Length: 278
Ligand code: SF4
Image 1 (cartoon, rainbow, N blue to C red):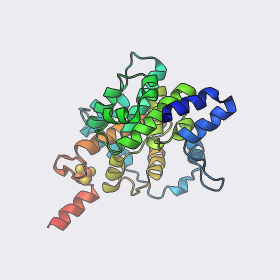
Image 2: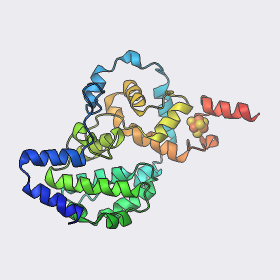
Image 3: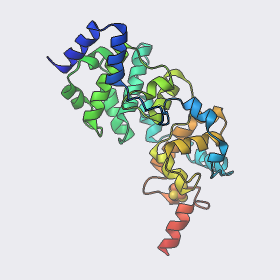
Image 4: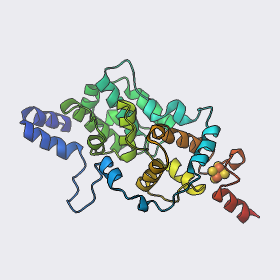
């Protein structure tokens, strides 16, 4: 009997509590031991995070951000045009749209936006049921261009089965428990699918930019998120990810185009590069 059939049979024969246990093991990350720090409640982290933990507060953060916004007026970076959070079919029912948004975001790690978009658009042709019942090799073929396609196919198929038996997650806490979903994806999903901004999603572009200028010298996404959230009013949080990611895709690339950048005069990375070149 194929794995999918076994899972379906297990679902159909299970009582409610057994079903919850099956779902818990199959789709969700393992629970942390009581001693380890919980990652499931962002609001709790925010309310208990002492401001003294933010060591490198930079009063110029908002000014730097305004300069970056000026450089981003055209909004024509990959994240603006084909960002994973834009890849869903607005004509479909709301549950399907939520599934498509989270699927697209789960395809995106370690993959360029145009490649993610191509694969996510292919999946728009299929219903949640289609994907839940699809053989994994067929699903892998549909998303073969994304990195880690084997693992991502498994996670997306699991998500489809979860959507059928439990419904799509509706909160950050529910979303981040799902295998294959981290803080950034959970925040973007809640922001796009429910229009609720619960935090600033941090990606690798943002870490690179913030460490170079510097805005905040820290490699930890969670610490950077808390720092940025301390610097901006909540109403501004929703646009910060897209603004900085696009800047990182077009100008402050891994190999930066500093000659096009209005931050040259204050950027430590630029000064360092140009001093060491002399
Ligand atoms: S000057 Fe160069 S390194 Fe500095 S922020 Fe601009 S593009 Fe990035």
